[in-house]
Structures are given as C-alpha cells and as structure tokens.
Length: 460
Image (cartoon, rainbow, N blue to C red; front, side, top):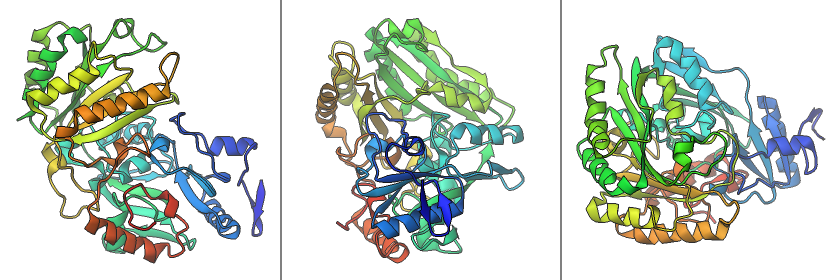
C-alpha cells in the first residue's frame, strides 16, 4: 500500500496480495508484470494511480479480465490499473440503451437486458469484459445481423492523463469518439460505455459435433451454405481436439471432432422464419452423419453465451488469428490438411467464424473500426500442457499461417488477436495518422503510449 497525495490508495507492489489480485489475467501464458498495480473501483482511485505514475515516471496500462494479455505489449516500467467500477449495469428499456461500468462481464449485461426482451452484440463467453471487447471491435454471434459490436457504442466515459473525467459522444468530441471506437487504445482509462440494445424474443442456438472423419464433407456443406446465408444467422466451424478433463463431455474427448455452432436471431415471437433458417443450415449437415452431440435448440437469448463452450476458468493459451477472404474448395482443403485429423496438429481448437452480412457494411456514424472486409475469421489455439510445448504450438501456428497465406487479407480483428508478436493490423495508414493526432491532443506526455495496440500507431 502506498500514499498518493493526501489519501491512501491501494496501489500495490509485487508480493502484496492486492498486486496479485490486480494483475490476474485470464490467459495464463502471458502474465502481467508491472512495477505496481491497483484495482480501481472509483474515479478517485484512477486519478490517484495516474498521479503515482506521473510522480514515478511510469507508463499507465489498463485491463479488466486479462483475456487479451498475450496480445498487448509487455508491461515494463508501468502502473497497471484493473478497472472494477461500481454501479452495476443500467438499462433504459425505452431508449434501448445500456450503461456498462468498466470491469463488467458480458454475463451480467445479458442478464440485465433479458427481462426487457432486449440483448446486445456480446461476446461468446460470459466471462469476457464488455468494455475491452467493445473498444476492440467485438465479433458477436449476432454480428451478421447488427455488425461489429463497437458500432453500437453511443458514449464513452474515461479519465484522461490530466485526471479529467470526460463523457465523449458524437456531439461532445466527435474526433475522440471516432478514435476511441477501434483506434487501438492509449487514450486514457475507460470507466463506462453506453451501448445500443436490440430486441431478441427468441434465438435458435447451440452446437453440433461430428467425428472428424466426416470433416471434409461437413466443411464443404457449411462453406457453400455461407455463400448466401441469411444475415440473421452467424456461425462458426471448428476442428476440436479436446482433452479428457472435467467439463468436457466424453463424446467430445474420444477423438477429434468438427463442430458447427452459432445463433439464429428472431426479433419477434413468430419464429417460423428463424426455424427455416436453422433447418437450411443444419439439415444438410445432419444428413452427412449423425452428430455425437447436438445442443441446437429454440431458447432464450442468454443461451447464446454457452453455445461456444469457452472455458470459464483462467488457462494458458497460445494461438494465432487471421482474417481470410473466400477460401473456396482449395482453401478448405488446406485448412483441414493443417488442422484436421491426421495433421498432427497440437491445437485444441482451430476454427473459421463466418463474417459478411452486416459485418462488411461500413457504418456512416462508426469509429476507426466499423466493418471487416473478409469472409472468415480464423482463430486457432492450444494449451501448453504435458507433451505439448509452447514452442510446438507456436511452430504449428506458423504452419497454419503459411498454409492459409493465399487467402490471408493481411488484416486482423483486434478482439481475436492471440499473440503480441504475430502479425496484426486493422487500421489504414491514414487512420493511424488521425488516431495518433488525437492521442497527442489527449495525452501529450504519452503516459498511455504503451497501452496502444501494436501496429495502431506510427509513433515509436
């Protein structure tokens, strides 16, 4: 514990239990190791941490759940602020808006919106922090219907390097509002966001799993369906090599499987159209072979958070990500050659998330990142455990990247980036010049410079 100004704050140093709590990350392969750390519950605590950094000549870094710890710059010579802002999620059902304090996880947001028949373009896991996900773009299973999640952000509250609390929207500071939404960070400590909600009466969601021996036919059928799929449906296909550990159904740990999961959105109580969309997707796949497990069902929107089966507890993960164009039959064959049965892949999961639809449409009122010009988002990852080493995982990630190079767009979705040292980039040179200009205005001393995403700044 240290004193800043006239009040005592919980800024902690290594060895202090408060330091361990503030630096906890979800991805255990990339621990946070700043000089000092604080879990901030109030604006005053954030201001005190910034003053401490100023006095000690340290950079300021920010995180909430630490899911993206491997994708960010190493935390050398820095004070880390872990945001856990109070107040809870506030829902304005009439205006279809939610105010979300920093540190809130998606599970709490979905739970707060559900009684009003509303939902939000949330992530696939209830444990992911909402604010970081949103400001990095946000790929949702509603994304083909509503676009990138960040496009729904209507206001952002943040403490800047001068200690000022600002509420930024399209009227108050349009340039900063534009830069905050996908500009790569480094503007201050975001304390809350205000975001659009949308009606969701029912969804059809879940996942179906087949033995990987059927992967070629299943992937072909799924890929051809994606070519003109309805925008109300967003899915992913994954090759999975799940270990026999608690929480994994035995049928899925018996050998490699191919999974198709996602969601079909219905904004009204009449689900006839949604059911037809689901049948058009799943009928041909189920005709290839009977799934060993099939959880697709008509249910409440909150169930979408469980469809992807993301881990609920912190785990070491090493992986890679690319945005791909249309892969065609050749690309599908290459994908299975390096990730499928018999490939020798040590990856636990290697998947393609369906893009297109509203994802591809620029938002006239959007921020620095407002759409994705790609057909699929590739993400593959594994766990360094037992005979599987971190070096083997990185080597195989390189092998997959080389195999898929003909279809790699060279761009990435920030919320999907897995590794700081792997290629990433989502802004054009012109956009980078603009966001750097905004940062220079908001943070002239560069106190938050190390919090900028790689390749999102031209300032060294």
